[in-house]
Image (tube, rainbow, N blue to C red; front, side, top):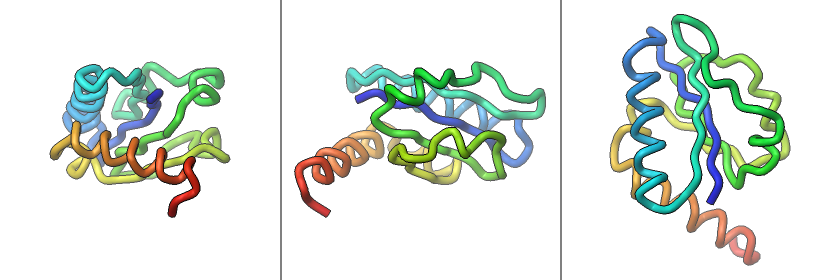
Length: 109
């Protein structure tokens, strides 16, 4: 599974970067590719390219605030959650996203 996403917390400091790291580590352990853009107190870092977005199977928005450029993800499956939720059981959460996407592709609800 190819994952791209954005993390952004209220202060734009700690949780933004902690969640980025947790998502990337959990994805690696599961054999997924993952690239996360951060939108924090110093602006946008590691901005996703249009190609990365296009190739992604899913977009994860682990955000507590409004982000810039959300319209880039139109037409892609988007999973939105708080940074706090993204930090808990990250691997299990990614697996459940993959299961839901697979089910949807195979005609399930």
